[in-house]
Amino acid sequence: MTTPRIAALLLAVAVSAGAQWFNYPKKGVPRNADGTVNLTAPAPKQADGKPDLSGVWLGDNWSPAGRRPALPGGRGIPTSKMLPEAKAEFDRRTASNMIDDPKVRCMPNGVPHANTEPYPFEIVHTLDKTLILYEMYYLRRQVFTDGRKLPDNPQEFTPTWMGYSVGNWVGDEFVVKTTGFNSKVWGVSMSAHPSSDMMKVEERFKRVDFGHMDLAITVDDPKSYETPWTWNLRYTLLPDTDLFEFVCEVNPAPQHMVR
Image (cartoon, rainbow, N blue to C red; front, side, top):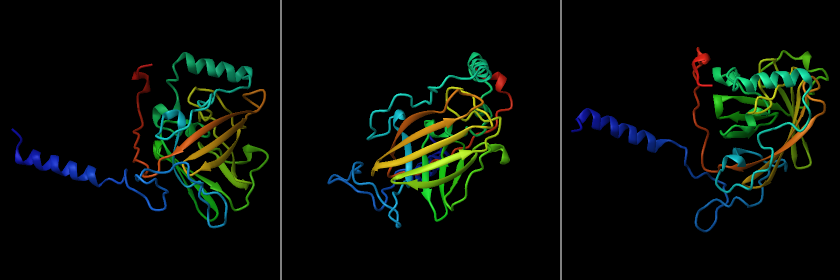
């Protein structure tokens, strides 16, 4: 039999869940006659006429509603041969089932790795920067669009997990260049491929219509790979939702995890 106290708690939980804004119809969203979102409507524009990438996006390989067929290589498998030291590190990581992946301790997964996770991210344009907010680990990136340039030598930066990013528009593509990574991040992909502090990443975002976006990623890491290599990703808009809170507690004993 349910006591009044337990009943009150259950009611409180139900009311709280109903008040969450994770399924809230948003303004300015093109809709079909039945109220569903028209994902193939024209892509929106910013006030200055540039394409508007704003919204919450999820990779098509993670099966969002309205997705297009995912392209091969969505997990970021390099098409360039790894150099000997990088290959040895890759073999070590895979032999241990990636037990020392920084994600085990809730550390950032870097760029472009963060774009490939089964969690959405949100793009927000402001005057002099574009923000990319990742649901996973509550990560965020600042892509500066105020005209600043990256140095030719990435080691001129104080290394960080997510690197330093600048962006500019080339036609209808938002081109983001990132470098300045630390030596701890597993930034390339979910498949344990290594990178170095010399890695440079170029991302080319293109919103093809209201509900779909393409992303071409080029990785240039002369310490790890013989040549730069590129792969292409597709994303679908999650139109009437927002990012969830994601809290990850640092794991003090990853050696106890199942390999």
